[in-house]
Length: 256
Figure (cartoon, one colour):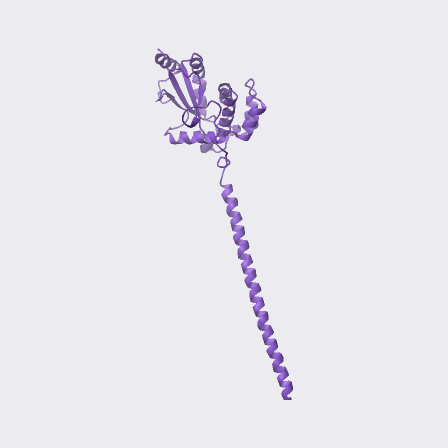
């Protein structure tokens, strides 16, 4: 073989070796890009999953809007719905939950007496709404019904709607009050309450944040449960000797 031919073959081998190295470099860069892209995709997917998980952990109460107290609400932070004359010399403070069976029991036993005393101007009642059954049993019926009651307060119909809710209270484990349509249906039992304004207030959860704030006040108040009933600051619900007749007498004595 001539020197020229040997030189040509050596040059061809060198060129082939150079091309192989270039191809290896290209393959290496391509693998690196694939790995980098995969990492970015995994990180992006993890971020999406994290956001979804975080949002899934929140209930709609966490995303509620600004606190909107119902019309005429009074007391600290506007959390009390007042019934009766301000000039009354006795004040009955009631913390209640519309899903609470014990609250219904108290209402049915004392309702007529309370109405008589407020109508006579001898007693003022301050209602505070809580949602402890939602927390204990799950669901949103306590909050939804409390919002609806606050909407009824806006319409000047709190007391009759309050009574209708207790008259139609579902079993404690039945979250029927979570259904806005049910709450609106019950409003039909109160003359003049089932209006477009009331329906919008119920469906939009206008007072949801106010209800949550009221429940927070209940939880931080050191109360043992609902109902909590205070007559001029004294817990009469814990008084086993208390009766409607005794309550009436205490109020009359205070008004002498």
